[in-house]
Each structure stands twice: as structure tokens, then as C-alpha cells.
Length: 439
Image (cartoon, rainbow, N blue to C red):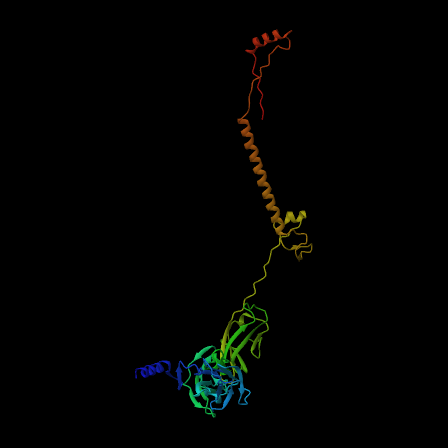
């Protein structure tokens, strides 16, 4: 009795049971197949692997969701070119299924034909890849301040995809998406709506609808459309240049920015009628010759099918400065003109007393001024030199040099040298000092 109890305990320890994926798996059983669940996107490839620790020369087999045998060992059982053998050994059987469809989803069975037959199941989950989204509702332009409703739709996703809205790179908040089954009953159709209040700044803006799904984590499918907004023109008047001068030809351009483009332009002057010498050429106002009377504020109105806009420009004409006149002084060099004409004149009279134009021999005033300046400079230089000479002379007179000469008088008449020395000593006291001056 004790021996049978020990055998039962050993049996329970060696054959522990784990419930996994709806299968009974015997731990410690070397012939029990082991499999793993797989997730694959529609159109992808999935690999199914079945392994055992030991084999008693029994073959491994894979079956599909309909319990059709796919491979028995290394032998193909079902003629489906999408299913290929990856590896076949006594302890492992691996197969691959390419171009997976939603119909391929389900439980696949790996069996080993021992006594008894042991099996293990692997669940294949197929993700339905959503189609590229479509935007509808953007058929006609919308006026400034109006509302635009757009709808984005995608189908084929499993589980249902998520739709997102964007405008010029900024995400928008749309209404909650609606989900319904596709006709095949295996995937889903997702729809999202959004309502925009548009302004003229939204004209030609890009609206994007994108789809997010776990079947394409590194990719994104989206659709973009540009919206069109109708608005009245905004007007800017551009001058030909910023310095209109009297007498010049000049024009003002009326630039109207609207959708659609302006079809008509009109000009008016705030203080009265347009100048007589001005003319309108479509969006341009042309002045043939500017005048100070053209000063004032000018208005231009641009109109399209939506409305009209107006702009203004203040015109200030610059006056022409009078030409500078340089007077010329002319004089004749004849003695009569020096005697009888105390002042110089631009004109002179001939012998008949008729006043004629400027004398061609007259010297220009600028030449006389130049000579006067030169003479003044020379006089200043001469004066400075004279002052320097006087100062130098006084300095030398105050610092004159004197010295004595000791020449012996009578030395020339002495018969010998001794006599000359005696005569010199005797006459030295009475001799006059010889002085020399130098300047």
C-alpha cells in the first residue's frame, strides 16, 4: 500500500498540468509538442514552429484552422503555394505562410502521433491593414467666415483604425469616429467628421487626414487636400518711387489681393476731381507731368464678385529748386573805363550808347578774389620774416664777444730775443687792449 502511494506521488510530480491556450500540457513529458501564438499583418508572412524534447520515431504534423493537414513531417499535404516548409527534424517542424489573409486567422494544431497522440495549438491573429483614407465634402469654395464640413473614411482595418485631422501641421479636434463592419464581416470601416470656420487666411491651406494602426507602426497613410476660401480684395497702393518731383512722369499702382482676383478698379481724389493731366489705365493712375496742385490723398477701390476693398495714398510733390546764379564782375582795361567807371558792371555801352552783354575781356570775380588771397598770404609771410630778422639782430648785439691779445710791442725792432722780451715787459703795462667785435 505504501509503495503504491509513493508511485502515485511520483506520477503527479512528473506529470504537472498547465492550462495554456486551451491545451493540456504535460510538464516533464518529452513527447509533448510546444508552440507559440503569432500576430501578423494582412499581406505579411508568419512562421509556425512546433518542437518536442524527444521523439520515438513518430512524425510531427501541422494542421490549419479547418483541421486540414498542411505538412506531415517534410511532406506537403495541402497544395497551397503560400505554405512552405522551413525546417523538418525529428524534434522540430516549422512552416511559413506568406501573403496572409484575414481568412487565415485562427488556431493551428501541431500533432505528434505517439500513443496516445499529443497536440498543441497556436493562435494566429491577422491584423487588417487600413486602406488609404479618403476626404469628401471639399467640393465648392467657401466664403470668408463660412463653415466647411469634411469627412474622412478608411476601411479594411482590424481592429478599427484611428483617424486624425491636421491643418498646416497643427492637429485639429474632430468629432468622435463611427465604426461599422466591412461587407466581408472581418474588418471595419471608420469615419470621422470635422467642421471648420474658415477665414481668408485659410485660403489654399492644406487639410490632412491620417490613419494610425498597429499593423503599420513605422508607416503612416494620409490624404491631403487644399481648401479654397472666397474673400473680397484688400488694397495696397504702390507709388512709382518715393520721391515724386514736379514735372516728372509718375504713376500709382492699385494692388488688390482677393479671391477671385479683382475685376474692376476705380480712382478718386479726396479733395476734388482727378488732375486733368492724369489718366486711368486699368489698376494704374498715370500723371504725365506732376504739379504741386496734384498734392492730396488718392483712393483706389478694387472689386470682385464677393465685394470691394479700398486703399489710400498721400501724394506730396517735391518742388524744383531754382538754379543757382553766380554773378560775374567784368571790367574793361581801357583808361577811359578806369577813369569814368568807378564800379565794375556786367554790361557795357558802345559808342552809340547801346547796352550790350558782358564784355568777353572782363576778368571773372573768382579770379580777382584768388589774386587778393595770394597777395595777402605773401604780405603775411614777408612781415613774419622781417620780425624774425629784427629779433635775431637784437640778440647778437647783446651777446657780443671780447678778448685780449698779448702781442709784444717793439719786438720787431729788437736785435735779439732777450731784448724783445725786456721791451715787451716794459711796454705791456702801457699797451692798449686790442679788442675784436663780431656779429
